Length: 560
Image (cartoon, rainbow, N blue to C red):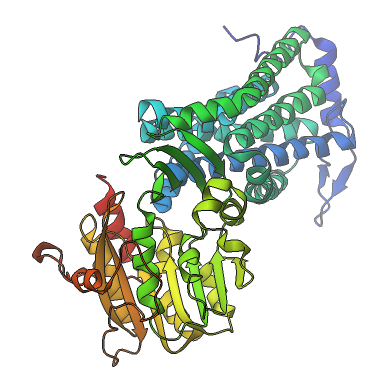
């Protein structure tokens, strides 16, 4: 027994319709080929004008754009929440492509009822795709079942996307019969161009304007309108009224649900996000580059504790961040320091320490995310913590990828401070590569000193020593050192000077260094001593083609 929602094919009793179709099939002039053989020209189905086919191809275009946005949203969300973007992207794409093949096969029996089947597929796709980010975020925050949920959602979305193509091909042939090759060419041209537009809209429009959760809901609504309303309008004369009404009611229900979730999205996101953090969230935003969260609580000593998290990873605690930033900055400012370059460090806390030297004339801070530096400049808890460093006239802020920026940089610097997050994604791993440190050499003055935050020698010793090895491989003499930062644990840095023939740079403070809360020469002397079980290891240097540090980081931090 067939479903009434899918049953729109002409019934045997509908003799007029069958006659019309027969007439349409035989209508058209005969065309002779080179051998004089006559062939019937491809007929146009009755009841469809020239613009109808364009309208259907437009629906193909929009649905393809929506499908790619769902795919990108799932990969981006996994990268934000889990890290390891290569694995997340690989799993999502492979599962979706496999499911698309299954969906294409599953759609074969539905081609006789293609209009109703396609409308139903689009209703389900709009529902699942639109709610996908919300469902996965909830699975991560409350159930801790992100990977299983991601596989199920990716498979479902891929299954529905795969069912679209055979059904759309059938609908195109109903409007005007073509040779198989021409029909496939038209279909995939619209599909691929739609995918291009969807791929560009996701980072350039949807994420900045709506964020991940709301962006997926908006795309779901567009998907429902394009896939259901347009198709039912085109084939309204060939679809029974009750079927058309039921499908439109289903689409309206999905739109109502997506709209309701959109209105509640901010509250839902705040509630879910709070499950991931021990302390109350005072600010949160998702940018095209990362998820930024600030929390506040009362520390053990009774002081307010403001913490910054990027993609869930702690960047600092206001209670002890001075330990980290003093250890990062001041050993590198021994000697000449009129011009200083800071790569990363968009919170401006390292910049605060640099500006404590009166003879620093110019500082360039390069950070990828404008939202981070905007917060550091305008958000009171962060602005007060960095002593309004970004308002200093000596500071120039550049928003760019540090790797690409270095390729075109012409100015030279006396000291360089590298304060990137740990290399737990492919995008970050390139900033810890031999090639990156080679590029860095182009902006150094003779005698320049470079310092790199290099992770934890205790929790991730292979990652730490891989970074030190990589810097040495790029042609620098290095001094490794480590300090204790209570909110982080044991944390390490690498101080470097260009030239493998140079002696390792001495680890001490400048004679005119400002009064510090944590660091002095005695602490620095002890910082170069590593316990037996955390001394240099035989590890690979990291390159663009062999990002060893990403392998080590992913393996060592997975249990923390």
